Amino acid sequence: MKGKNYHDHKRMGLCVRCCDKAEPGKIYCLTHAEAERDRQRKKHAKRKEAGQCRYCTRQPLPGRALCEKHLETERIRSKTRGKHARPKAKTTVEKVTMLSESDAVKAILALRAK
Ligand SMILES: [Zn+2]
Ligand SMILES: [Zn+2]
Image (cartoon, rainbow, N blue to C red; front, side):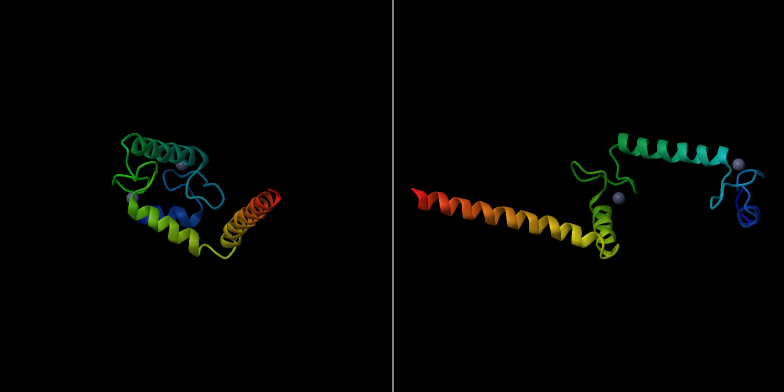
């Protein structure tokens, strides 16, 4: 399936595994897309079972699905994903700050009332 045939099929919008028409924007027909999804799912499940990182065969960090290297990669990726992801986090931080400020005010008022 590799080689010229693969690229020819891909270019013609045919499944790269057989000669059926591929799904729009995909390289597999419906049957093989499902088979491929299943294969990926099994691969992930197997790695998870084996206690391996989702992306490689290294040991993931405790409580995480990724190894140290790939956690860092994910972190960088989410950071560089765009400015849309950041304000949300900032809002959360602001909310927490506001909350703790009002809590501090309450605490001061409670002290003064005594
Ligand atoms: Zn196919
Ligand atoms: Zn990894």
